[in-house]
Length: 478
Ligand code: UD1
Ligand code: CA
Image 1 (cartoon, rainbow, N blue to C red):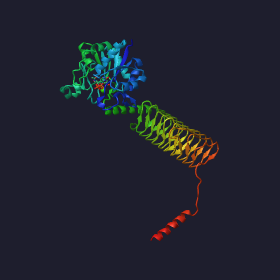
Image 2: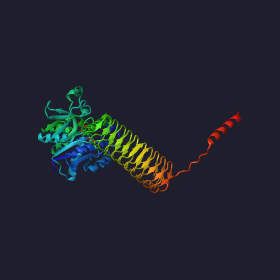
Image 3: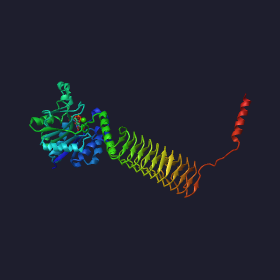
């Protein structure tokens, strides 16, 4: 039997969101709400001691959270937060699992909660020998939240929680008296909670079984109910509407930008950048306004990322210049490479050290070797290109025959003239040349020149003859 277990409530419908996607799978800071909460919970207990209550769109939520190793409790109908905990109580009974002495309850839609705060909740709960400890905050606008009533001002003892929907006319008329909100995060002595869940009633305006009613029941039974205020209001804000989510998202982005700036990264106008919490950037890199750095992206030192670039799941070396408007996904870029403006680096591309990829060049599943250059208007798909090769303007690897994809292999020091089409599968060996405007259908041996186009015909005087003939015809017509 462990001391503490954690319950994450995530079964609710999220009606206020007006979205087909389950609320707790909406992302803020580039990660689903529920996964933020599970990450925080994981800092406290092992994954097997975390129970996630699922109900509405349970299968989708379980699929998203299962890789974390947490366990799931089904709440088949969502009859309120009190009912969610009834399902947890029944799960322990039905599975024959001994419940932990204390249960921490987190909300799947309160994602900014910090591990330190859960630790503080736990410590207070034990120190005060409480049956229930409520995490609270005093936000500028408490509308929509349940309010925590303290026995006296300044006392840690609580007399109850009143839901927004149950506030009386009097209470609504004097909002300054009821500014302390219930975060929806609690610690309970498990037996004190489980003994009372059966007595909850749903005789309120929402017709739900409110977990919050347990507070007054405990007080009535002379059990201790205490409140502890979170250090920052932001970390207990709920995400019930898209607007609230975007507010939380902005907080995450601010945290990410602040973290990188503290590590020596320059970010101009950080408020315009979208940076996920998982992104790593080394010192002396400069990020210009309106850049997005997403997913598992790592950027080395001394890079410059110019405006309007979107980089997702990429590993970028040191001293890389990414000019305006580049899109990079699931790829790697070596030290000192230069990209863009407007380069499109699609998945599984490997851009070598000091390579150049210029404007309107698209790569996909392509390796561009060290120091190779494709500076203008090219499509390089399913290609392996060696070092020091030069890919001219408008070169296209024709990798698709309508049924299958084929590879193009280009050696070191190859020169591919502008506007050539390389019809895969095809190999250009090291040191070879391809004349501009060629269609290459056969392999080119090392150090050879390949021409794959019609020879030019030049007709002397043709143009002046044509003009003279035209003038003559005009005169006859008059
Ligand atoms: C709840 C609290 C409120 C508090 C607020 C903080 C209650 C009655 N009220 O209100 O005092 O200020 O959180 O954010 O608890 N859920 C289930 N099963 C259900 C209903 C809800 O698992 O049957 C889950 C939801 O998915 C959500 C969490 O419980 O993650 C809270 O439910 P929600 O409906 O958002 O409660 P609030 O109205 O925000
Ligand atoms: Ca909520």
